[in-house]
Length: 437
Image 1: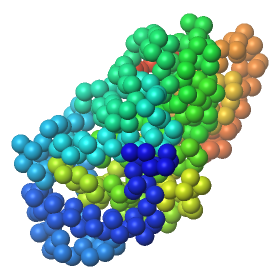
Image 2: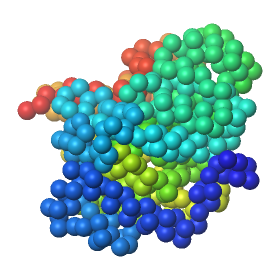
Image 3: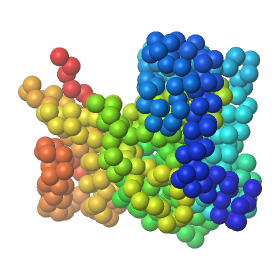
């Protein structure tokens, strides 16, 4: 397990040549295995493709994309490449209309998933003597069980606290000596708020050292603010249920992009409109092909997540490509007065102001037949609402900087800390109340 105390698996030390050789071998085997799936068998037949046509990694582009709609259309098990009696678990999306997406797992799939998560945690210094507390939901949400089994495989004492009940979370921190926490960014900020209310100093009263964050797009300023609040190093994580869950990509101690494990996935970045590949360093839609999945391998899956491959080598020595933090989703883009806007652009501006807290809400409305945007943002504890002049100046400066960034002028409203709605799951950042004509 312990490869020179740096690598959890020898595959982490693969050179680019070794990565690509391994990928081609696994891709050919995966495509052959996909012929057991009624969906892929029919799709290859329709395209006039055979598994033997995949002779190089570039031949991957001959294969059509797989989409979330494909998973819904074949609900529940139409993409499976093994009989149902070989599967031991399924996870499902939380879709409230139409069919959800369902992902099946064999026992080997679960073992590989746990291994990938353990590799991520080991990379940032987690060791068997750590205490790992998971504040994610369990059940159908993959963040809970994915990190649970990965942390156990690594050998840490695990605390499956699940989501919510913040006072209990804090009691566990202090009573159990928690050193590593997994939380979404908005909940990490909430943990600190309650610590302040209860007079808990995370640096003196807890042993917290490492925070794993993900599931919500967030800016670098948000990450740094959370690190400062909790006195931890916060590492960005990326995963999605269609790819198993967490463990797809993860930051190393350099914190300069998330290494995507290329022995598990082939990564492409394409223009979301033309679907043509874009150069390294350019933002586009992330497309992934699984390489070690038995139950439901997916070929060229369009994730809808927007990111880029960071050019150059990482000082940590790993040759696995690095993904930049997610910029948002192509289907989450706000179009306002003909301008394309992503919520992460607004957050990046807001988090540069020390006078502001972490929570904000973007509301879109129709006023006098025109679309309008209001940005409500909570202020920090040390900003008094008695100083109207200071508040007005701050609102004006925030408005100016937002206008420069998103090219339209929103209405900015500063509100007291704690006044915006809170959620135990992913934070709701956008409320679209516009009239649909």
